[in-house]
Image 1 (spheres, rainbow, N blue to C red):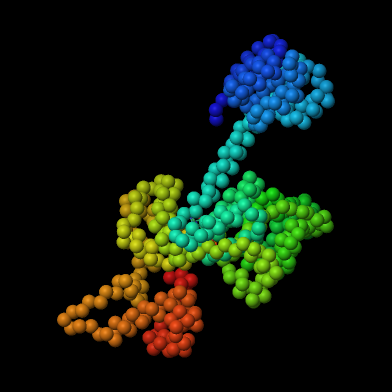
Image 2 (cartoon, rainbow, N blue to C red; image 1 turned 180 degrees about the vertical axis):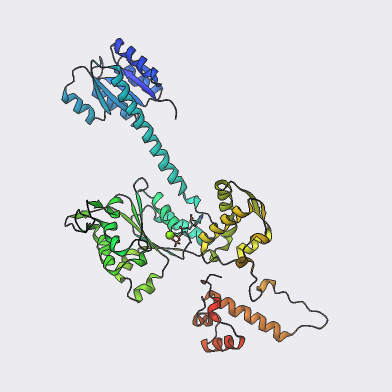
Length: 469
Ligand SMILES: Nc1ncnc2c1ncn2[C@@H]1O[C@H](COP(=O)(O)OP(=O)(O)OP(=O)(O)O)[C@@H](O)[C@H]1O
Ligand SMILES: [Mg+2]
């Protein structure tokens, strides 16, 4: 941390001298001024962090000097010295933003202590500012890696809606980056300097979730030894991220509906209505519309939440992002794990790109971490990849299915049959093993498809994409 600069303004040269000596000894850079005008000039010339000023200056009133200095730089910390320590002037000085005040005659040690407190305040404020900036930078939009059309659409959308206060509903399979999107929304919104409060509705036991969300009054239940704020209150002015919203119980869904409508609630065991200004971002990896059909999720709540829907596509639908993500994780883990893996052999990269990643980006991230820790240095080849990735598909990929005519010719019916198998299995994968859907994709009757599957001995469920291989 750079040296803190203190400006002393006083018309009494004895005061200036003693403060210069004390503060220089304490390790501060010190400048001196004998009146208000000279003080303002000095602060304009060299940025100062702390100003110790007399209340009664020959030219300007001490209160005005605080006003003018803080207008020059809002971060200046003013300390006021007063010769006639009246309570009124002290109160006025504090109201105008003085950090503290000192009554004359003073003991230099007292001044040193007060300036030390001010310097500590300056340090903490600067640290806080840097930390906030670091967090914000971490969620800059370019930190969401991807060039594929689907991810670009998500990014565009995040950018468009971040500043609005509307409720956002993020849907996507597990590990696709829903939480990352929620963070991006918050840190690119006008609320970015206010808290982002996450709540995992699926991870908190149901009986605790209500008081977790809305807080409780002292004595509301056994163990409620004092009043506690809930996450909605903590998020006031900021954003609340309700993760795994599909897990919310029906009674809590009713309460949440009210918050969405009125931005108001009561603490558990309390009757005072609390009003909050909170932006709501929810996420789920379940299909909420199905939950609504099954009466496990209230339809009115669904509509209230689904104002701005964002769907984060699974990784297998944006394979062009895989090489980029691999590079991103390689760089990151090489640094944090102190390894020096240079990259992947082309064939290994091809296999990772063709794998279906049922656990999406989280699975890819974990895999790269594991590969790096095991490999430590050099290039990752297919020999390093786990079996589930190298396993050849049961039916050859079409592009690998070159037909070679040799002297004996080929069996047309066998080749056609293989091609047919390939298309059927591809359709089953796309339809997650649901034969009705796969039949639609193939423009076949369902019964025709089922007969073919039976004849070929294919179990449709074993070709569902969502099943981990
Ligand atoms: N586009 C991306 N670029 C870089 N990292 C990403 C991207 N998408 C996701 N990640 C990383 O992948 C991991 C999983 O993402 P995240 O936790 O946001 O997923 P999720 O959808 O909330 O998963 P779950 O449903 O399991 O809670 C995180 O470490 C996240 O930082
Ligand atoms: Mg998540």
